[in-house]
Image 1 (tube, one colour):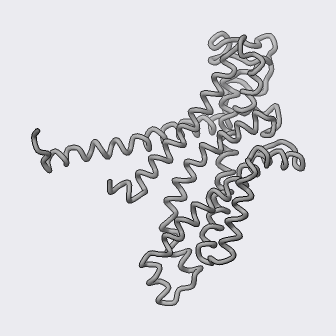
Image 2 (image 1 turned 60 degrees about the vertical axis):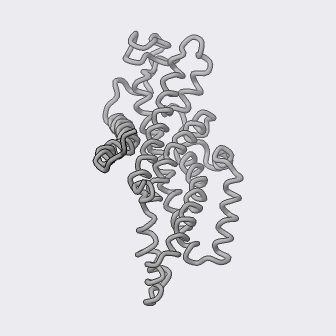
Image 3 (image 1 turned 135 degrees about the horizontal axis):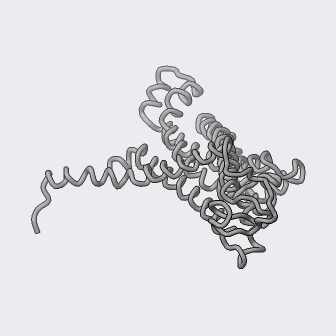
Amino acid sequence: MAPITSTAIAHRRPAARLSRRRNLISGAFIVGLLSAVALLSLVWTPLPPEKMQIVHKLQPPLAFGLLGTDQFGRDLLSMLMAGCWNSLSIAISAVAIGGTLGSIAGVSAAAIRGPFEALLMRICDVIFALPPILSAMVLGAFLGPGRLTAIAAIAVFMIPVFARVTLATSLQAWSRDYVTAARAIGNTRLTISLRHVLPNIISQIIVHGAIQLGLAILTEAGLSFLGLGMAPPAPTWGRMLADAQTYLALAPWLAILPGLAIALAVLGFNMLGDGLRDLLDPREASR
């Protein structure tokens, strides 16, 4: 077998880098496409998503409109576009709130340590014991189903997820030489956290946030499926799946289309998170 020369290795490197970027490019394309559809739905849809036309109910794709109609004669393409905005806006809002609060808690616990760290971990354990669906049911009893209930339920679950990740990465940062040097010259723990720890872990928070967005969309769809998401007649992918159960044999496209939309969104954010991890994680780059 011919020996592997440095020239051969050099030729392989661009291919290896391209392979590592495939997830990032594919995920960014899918997320960008969904974001464009969501923003477009705010100003234009083929028909009003809530407009009922009973005479055109249960029309298959291309028979009336591009993707057909549901049991009330509503245009499925318009509903999917509007549902894209509702799903993405709820997921992004929930992850942003939960990620911000959880990251603050994790960085603070790593700086303070002691009883505060132990208390934070116990609170995280309690929240993990209550899944988002149960949290939404409790919140729904007080607030009623709606956008705020879905955002709050998902955000509450995201706080301990980000807190644990941020705490672990912050503790690693606190053991680095640059933090030891900052402490030696008299910097306070708050200054070290803001100037040295947080900038060095922000990339990992971003990567984790991108991955959690896929889970948030899946959770939002589950909440809407159970009637705990946005109140009707606002279209959401989860409610479209729930409404399609009765018509699976007669009109399977009612379930296939929103199911594919959910799967595509989750796939896109997962691929984007994996691609960002390969791009921003020095250990992955060194490999």
